Image (cartoon, rainbow, N blue to C red; front, side, top):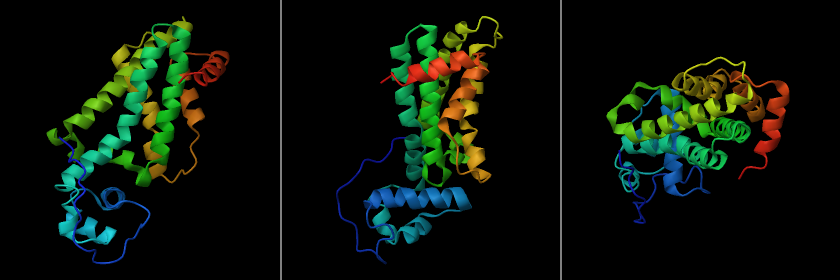
Length: 226
């Protein structure tokens, strides 16, 4: 789905004052929609409800988004694009060197965990809603698939550091690594508010068979990556 471009046209006057006056209207809409989608469900949320939560008229919302599908598409894209962009850069930087790939995997897992941990209203939980599987959100799923593939490639190359590790096929390894990071989502749903990115990143490296010394080395090397 093509995400609606930003517009500079002014909408109608607000029905009530800004709930979050420090944010532009588009960002206020996204923030309010995220909370409603997560807490009461995408199907049960109307654009009128989103507009009411922001404190604007429903007609004004349509100056920024064509509808709630476009709002969800942007929320999903924003939740995954930074990690996908970082993953591609780290993969290119690490090349085929196992030690560099271990450091890149640590850096990616830590960054991805931090992003999911900080996302307003646990936006990552929207990955699991049935509507996210609709063809309207193919672009989001393509980005997420690309991210998962990089996890697998980095993990496959890095486990050369641990010759005794199992020979899990790369596609399955990719899914396991991705799920190790995305465990943050149900943990937040369960009320865990403090999740250390470094703990999750170390778990990802242990999953591919690295020993504690190798994990510490990868964490130190990750700090040198751009």
